Amino acid sequence: MAKVRDVMSADVETIPVGSTLGTALEVMWRRDIGSVPVVDLRGHVVGIITDRDVALASYLRDEKPSHIRVSSSMSGNVATCGPDETLSAAEDRMRHAQVRRLPVVDALGTPIGMLTLSDLVRGPDHPGEVSGALLQTLRAIAQPRDLGL
Image 1 (cartoon, rainbow, N blue to C red):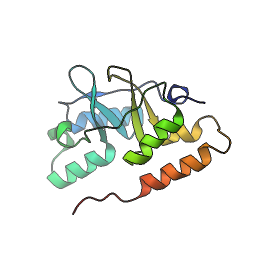
Image 2: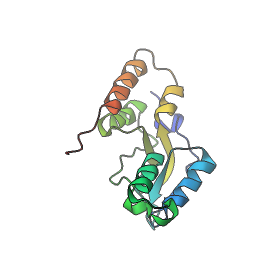
Image 3: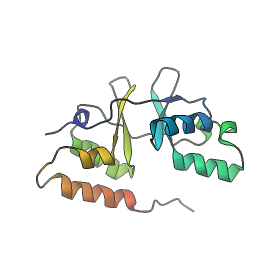
Image 4: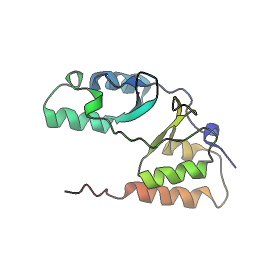
């Protein structure tokens, strides 16, 4: 059975929790990615910031991204996975958390990669397993979240 390490992007770049959204945008632009893991002073994942988070925060506050701290706009309590987990376990976590990407962390919580839906789609074939499971994951992620409004 395929593992997360078999398909993840191993070249992950992070930003410190005290950074600005402008710094996050610089990383996203340079790397052509839509999200960046946020780390604390020990290098452990404490959040994730997406291009959508940046756009909404900038618009709603009517401020430049360079004036807004990542910590005020990031998603905390991030779902992660380990490199030796099966793809189906990681996909299940994506489904339940309704996320399109998971930071891959080592035993200490330090990011060593990213696993995205794109990685799963491009990953090794699992006859009769991935296509149905991946479709369920996409359906779960696409469901509107209850925002409690």
